[in-house]
Image (cartoon, rainbow, N blue to C red; front, side, top):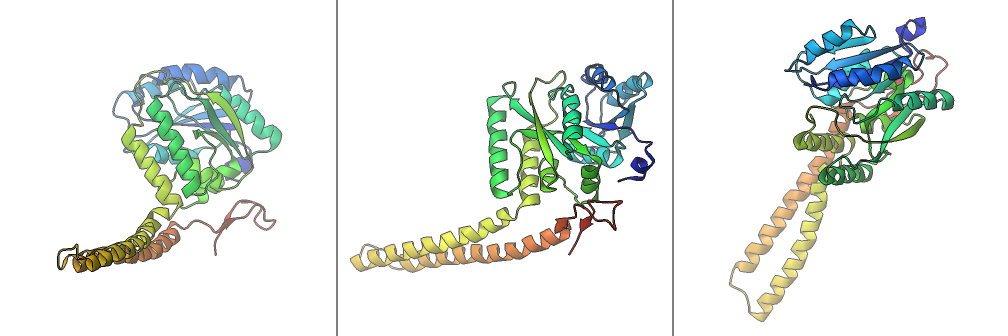
Length: 327
């Protein structure tokens, strides 16, 4: 719990909105989300994080802020990426509950009321927004998204809800736990479930982008997938080990074939020894690389500094009930 929350002078709800070159959609976003938040009957702030926009986004934000005192603008010196902008917002949000949402209006702001109600009535620390209808996305986007969640759940072993992006509600406890983690390349759709906090879901149909163009092209989606796999699993490093083992088995089979051909006299002199040596040495190199990768994976995990467990409650450390404990 932060000092702001102890004094009770923070808002009940913070809405974190990463923004990058969104001059077209910002007025539509403000026009739609403000009535929703006003109708909640709780104090709130809308924390927009300008991720180094190069268009008129800063000007539009300043204009909106003049007539909307609950709007708060945080600007980053340079473009740092969506997840890092989201991190900046989470670190600065003052609310007892924090909702993260994109500005493109594909995730409906009206769902925030349901998220808040579910969290308060059931005592949840996390409420995921889950897309039940993605018909507005292209077939390629739907296929790649489905593949991403299947691979992540299988390889990373993280209980990630299908079709749950970065539209979610977090309690102050969850936000403080995330802030305490020493993550340099956070992927929150994996990191939040990793905390193991009480969570729920609300469903909605994904809409089309209200205006402007997507700021998440294929290259960024691939980068997110790579960060997800390398940040939560050592499986890519172990791939070389399995390839080395498969190479050794293949080498044995080829050696048997070569010996058979040699006995039958259907082979060029010297060919057998060269092929067997090449295959064996290649497999041995991959095996050694895989073993080295195992040690690199352990060093990598240690340098990440993730806690071995998370304390759910501690009467002596009541100020931080989810403080990270390290071995």
